[in-house]
Image 1 (cartoon, rainbow, N blue to C red):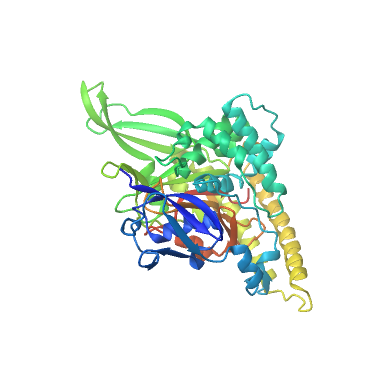
Image 2: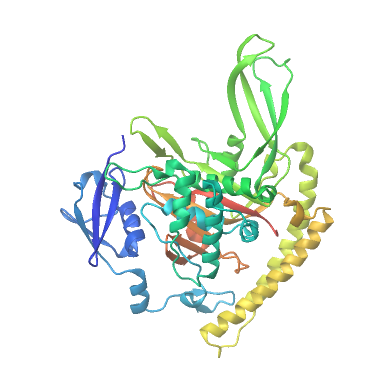
Length: 486
């Protein structure tokens, strides 16, 4: 069984209860402490027997005792920003812009092992149609599912109007636990346990889609299912149709790239009664995509039940994923032609847009502008470019004969990465979850936001590439892709 111990983190005169998984490392504990105290992990000094806790030290060797008070030293992020030199990032023109003046999005306060929920919300918030339909929704709180939808609506409204201020998702958290009793699970010491972010993400989206059916066309993946007997080639292949809500990336010893894991996820072998052999036989089930939705959810199947430890262990293998995903290989051969035509049209527009962006990047801006003025000028230019890009893509989609806004279909096989839920640690029921969201205002795709609960910071594409896994550090669990140009 999982070895846990409840300790008390003391920082700046405040005490925070924390449930610690002893199979994790110091680095994971620092991420949890960061969620409680706002002290960045790299600035923490956690005082334990023998000196400050090291990142690679296993907590099982620290000797934590139940209800032990553990002292943490370090300056919270908001105080760091007041005293440190202002940090800058490079904007489109090559100039430096103060990241703290750029209208940062709002983070969500951790209410006790709720990072799995906060990261799920941040990725769900990137789905435009979800925000639109929730805003229009006029349901009631009379049932647990109805209350979850209405509290999600209220939470999204707070995120939209909070102007970068931290948001407390208390009512939302309460409605999630009422709708899904498994998220009410508590430790022996009386603390709510960490949960699996993929389960939270999928179940919340499922409930909202059932209450607002118009959402389904933007998210669901219709597939053709072929069931073939591997022991009798003369037996007819059974063909059926079903709808999937996500693609699963199954990871084995040969999985190095996302597309390989997705292929694995669309095939499986089962054993069932054969009507021609009159006995159990092996069958291969193959799924092929018929239509593509605007949004594609990808799940890295990294967790599996480990009987010895009694918890969901994590597959650490590194699996690289692209910023732009082409799923042509996953589409039914009889349906590919229309997607090939759509991909060609979209690719032409992309090339035009990339060339125009390069020209903007070369343009020299007035050196007499202030940082804020420079940022606002660049933002205005990017807004104009985005509007122009959208018009070009709309014309390309029209050539394909599909009204993508009404149908919710992606006419090409191309998708851009927009959001990630990442996990740090060795098991699903412990560790720490964070979200990474692409800045939709940045046409270059270089600028991303990292959401460590209520702490929001700017990161580059290089940081996103590092989420491929390979260690107990941050590794992608959920990827959200959006059809190119949609």
